[in-house]
Amino acid sequence: MNRLIFAGLIVLSASMTLPAQKVKPVAVMDSDGDGLSDALETELLDQFQPRWMISKDDCSVMPAQFAPTFVEPTAIADDGAVYGQVFPRGQTPGVVELHYYHLWRRDCGQIGHPLDAEHVAVLLKDEGHGKPEWRAMYWYAAAHEDTVCDASQVTRAATIDAEKRGPSVWVSSGKHASFFSKELCTHGCGGDRCIDMERMKPGEIVNLGELSRPSGEAVWVSSPRWPLAEKMRRSDFTEARIAQIERLPDTDIAWANPGKRPVQAAIYGGNSAVGGIATGGRSTDAALSSANDKTNSSLDIAERRTGNALAKSYKNVKKALGKAAKGTGKALGAETKGTAAETGSH
Image (tube, rainbow, N blue to C red; front, side, top):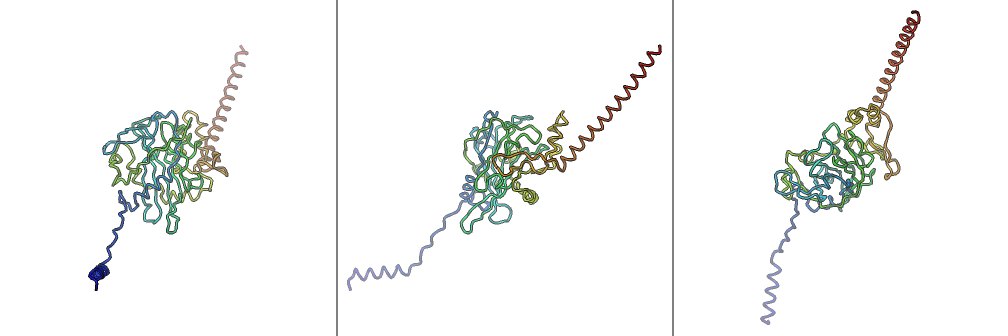
């Protein structure tokens, strides 16, 4: 046999007995260790980012970008940067929550202060079968959270046309509270204004990761100088809040904390009792009804629940004051007649 042919047979035989080499799996990056890949988090943050409407003359210009590695939050540019957070919703597979934080150098409204941390949140569900297909179920807009003036709102994603994309969000001038409607901006305690607004040019979305493992060395998220850590720590979609949304008509946006509406009405009224009563007379549950036209929303002004109680109380007080005034008038009239008669007798 030809030596070359013989050598080739030996090599072929040897190669057939060698074990097949295993292909190493590509590592999936999960920087914050929450079970969701960095790539998926980036994709979702991009897809559902809201369309931000901000005031042209906001004293803080635009949401700020903050210096990495600094323990204290230090704004380095007012460039419209938005910070995102993506995390699984409990133990339910295929459900995740996104937070979009617009962080400002300062709050320059009434009772202003340095640094301002505001946000909008959405609950997503993967409805794909094998291939991911994410749909937004509910949205939440934070406005003066954890204060007596809390005017945060919740709604179904379909109500604000935001099932496959982000909604329009109006950010009040100076105070930076978030609203799903320009009309809602003047509610709460009356300190918010959405006048002369323009759409903010989309800036960079920076993934914050998780509070325990912040991405990009954003260690400033835990600073006690603002409530950002508390906002990152909790879900905006509790079971009670989801039940509240499910009770809504398909056209309604609701107050997230309706129990605070009566107190807000009193604050909003200030020296004007009628103004306070009128504001309190609005529905304590439904903040706004979009009816059949999502672009031309009208305020729901039905007086019910607490609003009815306030209105009736006001009417009763007014009625009592009216009776008292009539009684006083009659007494004064009688006294005047008596005095005149007495004077005439002299």
